[in-house]
Length: 414
Image (cartoon, rainbow, N blue to C red):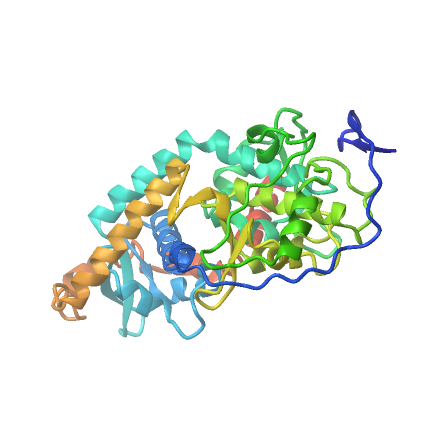
């Protein structure tokens, strides 16, 4: 008999079962799903575009020099061989380029947001504000799944886009909830985010809240790519595996033997919940690589994605692997769309239109050269091209959420 305890110590259930001593060695083939691949396509560009809009809007209403934005290349997730300036110039309806001379008189490319983009940004900020409680609860639930209710900000930074957190969430969101979150120094020199308050109402997984028990246990919804062709042996194993006890990702699972199918079902449950906490029910495989110890997972835990293709789809689109939760999609459409997803779709359409218009030559003569920008350049001298603003840019190390949090901690100590 095994007793499963909620991490805060209260008993929720007693399960009578014997764990299987071995993990069944079943290999299921990967089959390409073009429909779900289309869900992943364009994700990198959309993330980079919206992040750049937020960065430019938060830094200055007048514009930002390209060398400042170039330092954000890693944070944007763009391919190594794609310059930030090249990316910006693809969407002239979103980012307006102009030139501003430096102290030596050399023209430097600057970028600012177009009026249409500024309007979009204000709309996005309003949606963030309206959904702030929901976004905070998603972050709380992720922290509640960890063994110490804490994650390094570097790990949260990787999941920030998927969870719907604003790019500057340390200063715009986390700092507003001092009773829920605390920034802590980690032994390795990094900064971590600790959850201060446990909420039993949030300690319910999506599967528990939305699925009825069959024969006394919870089963994961499954679906396969057309033409998958499961062998009878695999079908039998999956049927038996689904009947195994479900372990909530919000309870202590240290009693489970990692070599068993019962433990594997718990791991599947953890990622089923994590993907349900993301806005678009998908995330890059690399984003979960640092979660093994915080979530108390065994070595090679991501193998569950290959072993359960009816629950997860691994898209090879782009330069990475993306894990998609199958049940969340009806073909290539999300079944339930968060308000922020609607905003992202609107921006994706803006990007597509700008790219097409540029390809047709509609913006060919819009980029002004240094001579045409002479009057505009003079208006920026002393305002944004002056020494004070340049020193602010140089001091920005571009370390993302980690750097942002360290600056906040310094200010709090002062």
